[in-house]
Length: 297
Length: 319
Image (tube, rainbow over all chains, first blue to last red; front, side, top):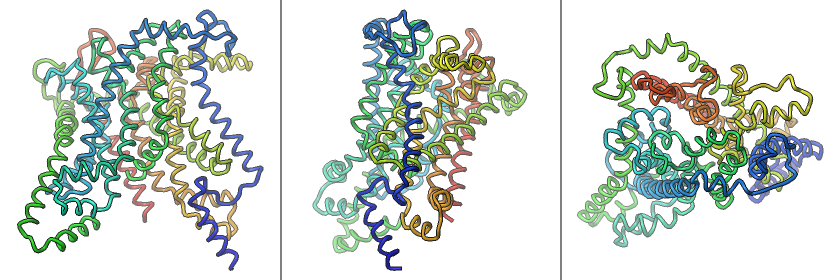
């Protein structure tokens, strides 16, 4: 009896530092077996991406006849893809539309998230439930009415129109994340700042917002990936090639370069470089945010 | 809720002496509440709320996009019932949603459990690798896999031929029997990482004393998994199932990029069908915005079902 209690206590004490909590120390055989399966799955998962990069580095004439793993590598496809697709223009389009969306979403989502978490005002719950209920409204369902709506207000084929759709469709979800984050901050913080004579906006800007940095980092990274990768709205709203962000352009490349795989794959590789960088750079916030979002919803 | 009422009391108690001051305080708080929530509410009302209403209305009309829509009642829904492409799209959408949901729940759960058995460093590396496909856009993964599935030059057929399995090599995306499973594999490839991380976090949250108690009672590894891990993860499972169902019902990008719904509608889903009705895959066809919107409404209803599934599963888990 005493030994069991001691063991229980020990395992609780172990819990905090040991992130990969184990029930028991696994038998070496079980451990090796699990490792073998996981490594095999990881290899299958990463293979298409390695293949993508390898194909982009192949000389054009070895695509169809050469071995699966090339013997000779060249980066010639990259400048070709950069120039012939007008990559720079679409890259810049993607970058500014994504950045503007992220800024818009972070500003609106933190303001509203704070209001719903910490302020009291009539109809707060009605508004919140309305936002929450349609949080997951699929873009697929809204694309026809949104197209018609942008057409009637003259924002079709305009990057501003696309930007508005991006912000309005993703701000509620980020607001939800920010609200969950603001709720973890103590109410006394807000009260104390008010007693000291701060205006409501000052309380938000000077006291609450600086503490919300981790929450904002999560929203920023999520929004960046989501907007950078968005295809349906961009492909529908914009027609003028010069205004297009990367995703619809990559889609049209498939038809144009269906025999020039190195150029095609070089374009794809260049388009995912920024998201991979952002992921590697902010991985911790990303995983934290994913968990928060999933568990709270 | 309880924290709100508690916070309500604190300032009242401390500021009870200055009634006018308190009144001003609350008024400024109300004002700030409205102002802070205003931008999101307006954007939402105009670009989410109104389009929902508009789509429902258009679903009852026949309209090419010019002039005024003709009200036709339930004609679009009746037409849907008799439209063989719509039936095909219905079967494919449901099949796709259910198959991706099952695979994208069971496999990530198994991986998340296995991750607890391996060395910590290996676990981190594998989690990082498995997550990378999740940050790649559907356009990129669609094009990439289309190249892999290419009948002559694609790596898959090359590998099969190399292994002497020539008979298995096929035109994956042009064969109506293989096209949907081939796309499901791409979806799975992209979704494993995210779902695995959700489960992995869920498993970290299980009270270790449950496992202690189970092992004292003589439960083996499988029994611990069956009677401790699975029941403890019910709420997480409800979330994963519901998210994946929803993603399946509303699928568009990946199918549009890889096949456009073909060959001869074999991979047609509601998303791709409504898109081609409204924005035309065939040149010169008149946009059918009314009929297309009826499918928008059906997709909304299906996503409502996915939310209901989550509510029911969560309720059951908390009982």
